[in-house]
Length: 313
Image 1 (cartoon, rainbow, N blue to C red):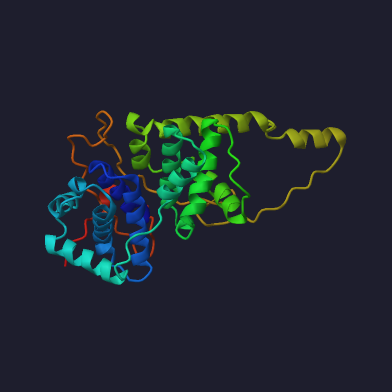
Image 2: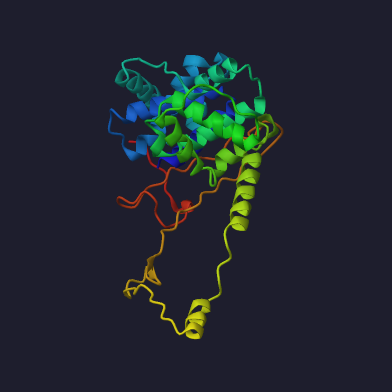
């Protein structure tokens, strides 16, 4: 359910035009709270709203802090206003009122300042890669400094900027850099829409073009696959015997040619209205839909339109 909640938080963060560090701090508060408390599925979205509200109050402009009635409307009236206040209080008490935390954006700013680099496109590409990473549980425990350094190095490679010698790289940075490359090909559509605007320098479009070029280069570099029966004909001509590994036939309908058919991941409706620099200018984000997993399966095979809203208790 984490990707669905983050899609909603990205939409809300963009709609209220909050600072980048507010988004990263809200996710940090959310993860810290969930590591200490058992959260019911019907309250998961409420916890996310409380984390965003606390993060905005802590470090953002006061005139942009979301109002509880606005968050209530964005949640389709699923929660009463008192529930937002109670959850905000509960999150603060659970975290012992320790709110401040060095975010990824803070380390990105430090790195750019140390290198005397004011490249706006580079900074926004690093933001985009870091927000792609927060969708994956693999990076939940990654230090913000490590994630910032790895995302900046990857951004320089994508944008073809000159390399910066910023010290010796440790194993954590190397592992994180390689892991980040595995998630660049299929980012969230909501996140891609956000970073496709001119205000964000269209970095999601740049990344998509870069990945397409890399894929085309990989296809050109790999040798062509010979047609079926090529090796059998050569064996007959040379009077040799080609032994193939036997495959056990399976009666499982999910098995195709001896291989397990991968599950189908549902795709949500992420169509957004883009207007100028702000994709939500004059347009309230769509009413979020929090999915209800069937049993223990977090990725059901039915379409997201069949998900039901949680009702407050």
